[in-house]
Image (cartoon, rainbow, N blue to C red; front, top):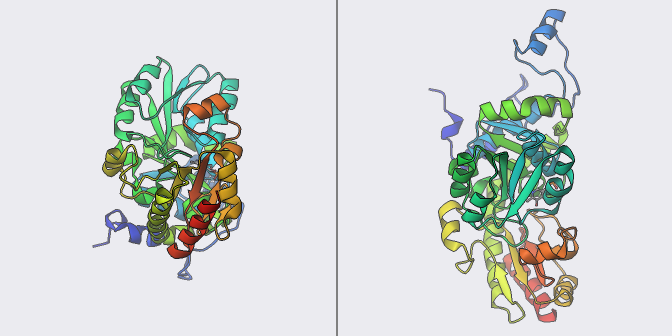
Length: 394
Ligand SMILES: Cc1ncc(COP(=O)(O)O)c(C=O)c1O
């Protein structure tokens, strides 16, 4: 009997999911760098455009390489359907635009990646869509923010940059009671450590730029959910608005998926060691890492995540100390990206979150002393030494 890929272990799904070979029997997935496709006859073009016959039409609507990536990621996530996008921000934007119309309302966790906040605060209001931000750890705040016209909830969990975690199941219940859909940005947890759809979310979004590539090469994104919602909310919009992922990038991301599990687990082992070095250093005022028992939401994390991930945040008390730390690092790069094989650290107040008004930054606890570090695949001993030396200097 043919194997059902949905029954495979996660490692097998990441390596073989969605595989579709050409008659050449290639081992590495074929890269179809083609904008359009030809038809055997005028009738066959008519049939494909009408949706009565399978087959590709145009790269903006679909591509065989991109489709392997979509199917592999869907299998990894346990989702019925996936739509790949040109970047993580295209995924976040599309995921919300497909759920709302003028006059609707969104509720969002207040600790969000800067560009997500820009979409909600600056962009959506131009189309008559308002957002209420809430402390994502406070279930009563989610409930109180609901209005009769609320159509979508958006949350990042763990959130950027202070790694707050949201009770996804409980927030999904509140969203559903209000007739709204819950969108979860699962970038920090990765499909390896958290499955928002299984916890009750309706849509998961990724920046595939992060761990899925994980080697600093291409941008990409993805939206995942059940087949009916993915079709009704996003199919036409993706086809006509044009956020498609390049097949070349899809191919690179496919290679990334093959090693995702291995990389993320090793990064997480390294992150746990680095977090302990940071936590034990006298210059550290506070360290937050979802894999440590002193994370304020350790019990919730144990319930909904199977690993702490590779990002560590820590407070060195002042901007001067945070900058001195960054400037003393020799191995770890100063960079605002995350999920890469190379470790990188950033000062969120002056980089990723600089567009956030100071009052809002302080509301989420993001003071000038915070550093966010994405731990990579270097040797844990080298990383610990680099971080210790930089902390001594801070
Ligand atoms: C949590 C989160 N969501 C979305 C994005 C956007 O992804 P991209 O840079 O691929 O557009 C980022 C980072 O850039 C992120 O950290």
